[in-house]
Image 1: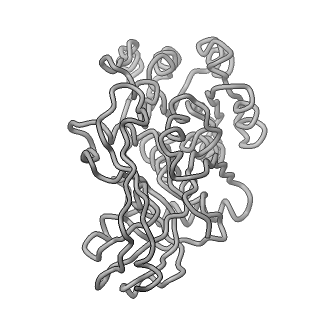
Image 2 (image 1 turned 180 degrees about the vertical axis):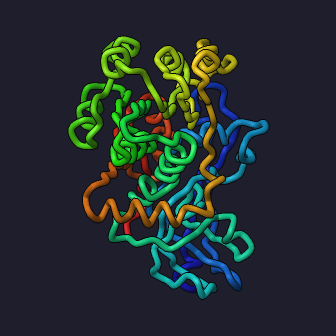
Amino acid sequence: MNALTALTNHQIRLASRPVGLPTRDNWKFTTEPVTEPGPGGVLVKTLYLSLDPAMRGWMNEGKSYIAPVEIDAVMRAGGVGRVVASQNPAFAVGDHVSGGLDVQEYCLIPEAQLKRSGLFKIDPSLGLTTWLNVLGMPGMTGYFGLLDVGQPKAGETVVVSGAAGAVGQTVGQIAKRKGCRVVGIAGGQAKCDWVVNELGFDACIDYKGGDVKAGLKAHCPNGIDVYFDNVGGEILDAVLTRITRGARIIICGAISQYNNTTPVKGPANYLSLLMNRARMEGIVVFDYADRYPQAIAEMAGYLKDGTLKSREDVVQGLENFPEALLKLFNGENFGKLALQVASE
């Protein structure tokens, strides 16, 4: 028996579909032996996992942009790790990689599933958790959502909800690079201070401690040209009262609605789109997969020269996954939420 086959893989599987907020009872903790990869396959040791609001939607049954996680399947998640065994010339033992590793300690990826997993080599010198944030799915979402869908122009006012979160922090920084006035919306004074003082936003509205409508009126006197929406609900309604003619609203997420036990609340002020000849459009990052290298190269350059910042909120331990995930929906995370599964 070699060293690998003596290892045990701890996994977290979806035991039942949650109603409202997920609880620990919705998860099943399992183990299985670690096995060597077959021809063309790769075995990866998971180091960090990405915890994202989208995971809540993946737990639901029904039509969506991606198939739901099946009951008893290992929970879907992106991650970064290190190759510990390889039968594929594209990946060497010791390489750091990112891709769909799922919520487990080791991920065995057969050759036939490598493309679907999206596995690719990464530069660890840029920070492993950065590859789950600015250089990962959130960063790609912010980059393509803002630039392709939002199409901001210098001098325009861009508003970003969830401004201190994974997607929001990237959106705001890119918008500033494009010469826009950027106003964030975040929960708590500490987050708002960080968004303004560290990321360079022009202003930030604390939705927990203030009136969002009043804040938008004060900080967006000429209206809102681009709105990047991560939360939906009442904040989306408030923004729609301030949009300009020809405004663009990017629908990235609606975290305020994900755990509803009643139907999702749509925008009450949607006729503002008609009056202002405005456009509301969704962004699904997987549609831009063939262009990820372009965005990664550009933003890696910004990270290296210090003009782009990436903040992660890291929780320790695979066993803490159920509780860590809830931080997203309670607004407790400060920056991109990640779970450390193992050290190097």
